[in-house]
Image (cartoon, rainbow, N blue to C red; front, side, top):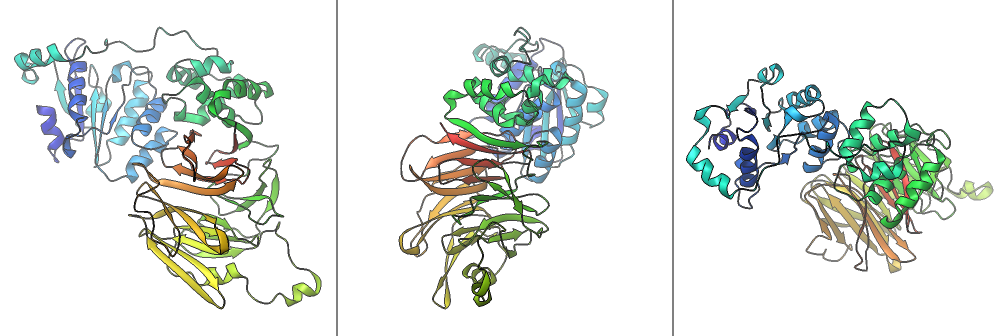
Length: 529
């Protein structure tokens, strides 16, 4: 088959256009290709990584659906393009029904942008090859031409193949949703809702902004209750106040409630900025959560309601992570893997004569000063300092009298991307690590780590947090595809999940069982219900 030869040929054009009139077999051909590409034993050169039927899709919804299949939480075509550009692995994408898309020109612009990358191969189905596609110098298979048809083989395969969908736009018969009604938009085809919100110039009480903010999480296969929860979390403070109550009622079966939230543009209380990293204050008098933004500024907010508690006086350029120490000070990790120690304004300090006697460096300060090499993740676990590196190793440092004990273990293939821990009896630590390899490992320094991963997905870990709650220890994992996973450590209940819609930058498990999730657009605190 010619298309298989095209996929194997490194010199072939990056784009192959399947064209022809209605009824010429384009849909059957692509159904056959998808069948071949999804077999367990398919060779790498023939594997398809993304398949998005474009009927009824805009460039935005096509990007959302394709991002989901590629393991990303991209929120816009530009985000998808950046994600694909950064991944140098071979990526084959099939896009049927371009001629039935809701915005062919915008979708073609997306196709042209993806075609720039050497690792990408695109198979696009359309009735006629446009000037924009022709400019890509694609391979063209016009199925009206006899050279592409083996009638005898085609007849044998077609007789056993499932009937293809009609060559008409999908979803056209569904009733139009009421864009002001949460129940309606949560229950109707989400692609149709997105298209209508894209075209609308009204706010619809704040539902439009919340829908577009939640992004591709809403177009995934999910229940109306799940969509209601995601919309509830994404509502801005300028939304109709009745919407939160309506969405809460619709989301009651999801097992989560929104305790508080701050989204981009909120004024009262103000949005603290992109939540690149989070850390819970372990100093009992603090009750603060450190929120690190993209400018290296660390703001402090109240764990219970998100109110501002101030900010650290010095920004750290290129900061990537932050960790509260036991005494209330914070360790900030920059993009070069260097740690600095900063004092939290909410932490207690000695006064009077006691302050004059406070001359010795603090335990955390000594541990930070002893760090060697570049770190990629950091966590404070009781009196210990844990950090990971780009080679997948985790080190745990602890003061022992006048010396520093260091435990070391290679736990991941590739960089460590998240660390969390729980303090055990007698000062021992239990450390959880997440990596670029998509694994979450558990390790008690001084002991052999578990041979198998606690969790493993074909998706890197972006954030990790652990806490002791009234119901026992919990672990929260943020994944690169936008999934947040919450589960008990010492029990086997079904895990809880949440998708904010945007890439998950940070998570924080609170001692009362709540969970904070940070993205570039919002900071939301969820409570199990």
